[in-house]
Amino acid sequence: MNALQRSGSDSMAQSPRSPTSQAPYLTVSVTDPAKMGNGVQAYISYKVITKTNFPEYQGPEKIVIRRYSDFVWLRDRLFEKYKGIFIPPLPEKSTVEKFRFSAEFIEMRRQALDVFVNRVASHHELQQSEDLRTFLLEDEQTMERERSQETGIFKKKPADFMQIFKDVQSKVSDVVLGKEKPVEESNPEYEKQKNYIFQLEDHLAEAQKHAYRLVKRHRELGQSLSDFGKAVKLLGTCEGNSLGKAFSELGAKSEMLSIKLQREAHHLLMSFEEPLKDYVRAVQSIKATIAERAIAFRNHCELAETIKFKEIDLYGFFSLILLIIMVVIML
Image 1 (cartoon, helix red, strand yellow):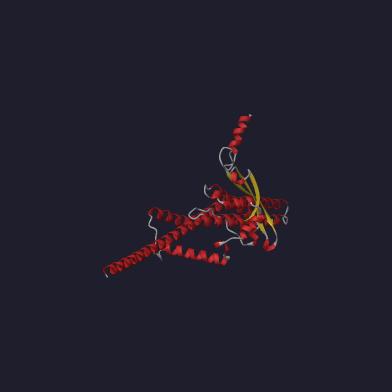
Image 2 (tube, rainbow, N blue to C red; image 1 turned 135 degrees about the vertical axis):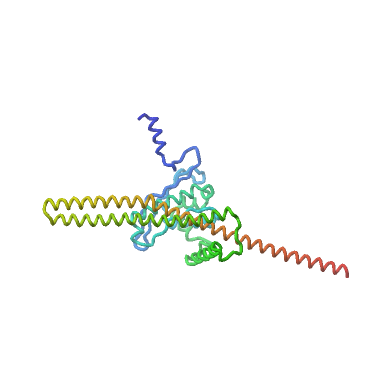
């Protein structure tokens, strides 16, 4: 292969994220998860590598260390500041110790966090966010100060925040389910899209359940074959030469099939179940944006109603003044 062919093949093999020198780019990689601390204080840290030619980043590459709560901070800030814009979802936080630090869970979360931050970085408005620059550029001490010095809605305790979320969810559900219709947006196209999102969530959730069952079935079958193989091999040691050899070979084949099924289960998890879970999370984020729109529309209608009443009051006040002036003139 000559130099020109090698160059062409190298360019074909480049990642879709590969930056080009001609156009502005901002790409982020979440890599190298590492367990930090012990016991209940333990957590996973990630190396976040930013490559860009944006002048405000003051350099082509920056490497920082971040933990899951930093990603949560970024998403909460974006959700609060960019109303009406779809904010990409984050992966769920596992509270089960044996799953939280398993290699498979850590890798799934790393990939999901990588997808999240690159979705933000590729959005033409979100990529201009000062909070994103803080997340990608500042050191760990600065990030910790940022998380501890929140104001407004972020200053509230988790219980207060959850209550606010429940109140908002309840109000939006009342409007969606028709329990309360004081002000309802009458936009046929918007209603069509909203109904589509709600139906899509149901279909995706159902598909994700089937994917979960499929992965679970593969794993259980693989584990059963592994147990069977070990038992048969043990039985082979108790038999004669020919029968013992046959049992040993059967056990070895069963264990090989077990390994193959476990690999297939992992492949299904990463290429089928996890993408479906990501789609479900994305739809839930869209629903959160719909909820914000419904609340904003309700507030707009209430303010318009208030203005109308004030205009009526003002008209009545001027009418009274005019009447008084007319009476004085007649006297």
